[in-house]
Image (cartoon, rainbow, N blue to C red; front, side, top):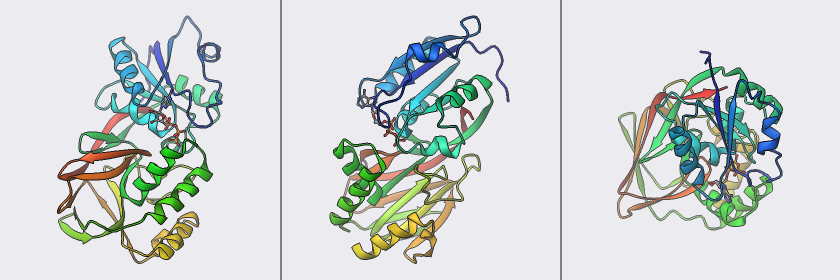
Length: 298
Ligand SMILES: Nc1ncnc2c1ncn2[C@@H]1O[C@H](COP(=O)(O)OP(=O)(O)OP(=O)(O)O)[C@@H](O)[C@H]1O
């Protein structure tokens, strides 16, 4: 599908995404957009979740395209406001991991990403939902949430910070709560190391736990990894880096449109949603898929 008569492009820029050294500013973007064809508006996010407020305002202001300039966290905030609308999401990947942009083959070269936005070639992609939150890349409960929690506390945004945060998460590993996972008519009881649910085939840094996932197949790819020792977890981490994680017997892969997670005596779930830490207060977690519910320029 090709959009015609596009004029109003709004850019929501996370100034601290990735290394925070990116050049994306009003002066920079003005060079690429002819004033007779486009009006462009640039807004910087000042704090966590601010991109949502800015995006909602841009919708009211009549934006035709809203461009998330940042990583998966910023994309999540912007895209969450665009689900089930006709407004197309553009992406300039400025994050450290850039998982969704990589799955969509959006160039990390800023000039090429801008050229793609101007091409306005739009595709519709699936959107994941976990309770009241949307996700576009992945969500998870277990070790991934712990890694993200330590990563956010580290205040560093690079690959080595993920390695350090993974080691901290492994040291703190415990299996307090038994969970039940309802999927495809089966009920699985597990003390999970990880319940990972993905819409996209990449987590960022070219790492994937769900290499068969597609943004347009109407299915979520699920990896359930049951309890294992710290040593075995390290081995699992090595297998992930070697793209051989399927070789570990504790890991089971599924595809599904919906899953429900419950635990007996707890009302909160530490989770990660598109690489951001969330403590979800609820009796149960319901994860589902909204087919082809977001327009993305890719
Ligand atoms: N001015 C700001 N100061 C601090 N945090 C911000 C600011 N603007 C946005 N944020 C928050 O920064 C977090 C990280 O953003 P983002 O995901 O875009 O970058 P990243 O973590 O470097 O990339 P990736 O997720 O691809 O690794 C998000 O939670 C976002 O809400």
